[in-house]
Image (cartoon, rainbow, N blue to C red):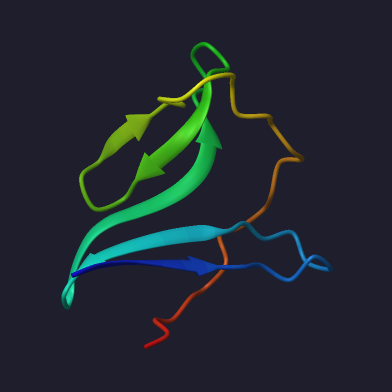
Length: 77
């Protein structure tokens, strides 16, 4: 069974949100919102596969403020 864990940041800190996708106990995606510096395209970088994904639906992702670090996260069960 695939489960999506969304880990929220503290809005008072310069941190980001991490999206974790598990298949059973196996982490299959670890998305971090970001943008490519080469062309400014906004998307999600998957730390598990090393791939950059853009919006596959309609419209575009919107860029927020740059953050200084990615939130440290742990898995909720």
